[in-house]
Amino acid sequence: MSVKGPTRAMILAAGLGTRMRPLTNDRPKPLIEVRGRALIDHAIDRLVAAGVTLIVVNVHYRADMIREHLAKRSDVEIRISEEKDELLNTGGGIFHVLPHFEGVPFFVHNSDSIWVEGYGHALDRMKARWDPERMDSLLLMASLVTSMGYEGPGDFMMDAEGHLSRVPEKHISPFAYPGVYILNPRLFEGCKPGSFSINPLWDRSIEAGRLFGIRLDGVWIHVGTPEAVKEAEAYLADLGTG
Image 1 (tube, one colour):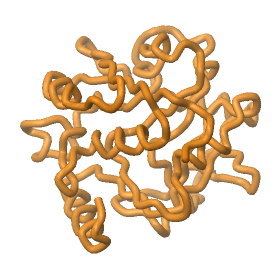
Image 2 (spheres, helix red, strand yellow; image 1 turned 90 degrees about the vertical axis):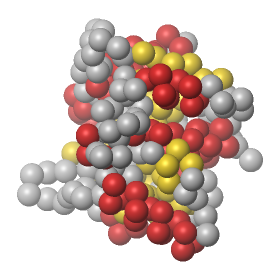
Image 3 (tube, helix red, strand yellow; image 1 turned 60 degrees about the horizontal axis):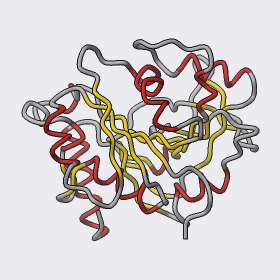
């Protein structure tokens, strides 16, 4: 059963999907299928299971295809945020849709992250851990040991209390960031409309000791390339899930 916490979410689906070519030559990345289900549906399914009742989806590349696909969902209210003129990046895209969330915290979910749960359910564990008084954001963090499709030295350092910090130069972190988090709208105080990254806001939050992480108990699959699609298909087929 879901615990109390955010009941609204945003799915980031406006990217061009260049690393996924040629699969994205005729469709947007969120509609690439893994185990017969579009990536964006994997994300929506998890959010709905966690008690989310409203999802805002930003779109740009082949936006009409995503809009038509999402019109088939009847289990959750979905609103579309068009980024026709320019891609607004992570920060600008979220800032643009803040009115939909009416000042309350909400989930943000990349459309290319899927995972196999370990103990409990990740989004419910995030809701249970979320503390809006102490946190600007709570990021789901995946162990590199149990991650697939990720290439990099790790994204954040995380201490025993869950405080996040940047990975120092010439160091590596045992954690990757899957692009799933709870966000407090106050993170955007002082921001102006336009295209900008969320990273400078997180740096400011790190300095204030207000950026936190929680470890995923499970296997994270970053579906960012055609090869990663094949790996995800094979892994999930072995588990008999997806």
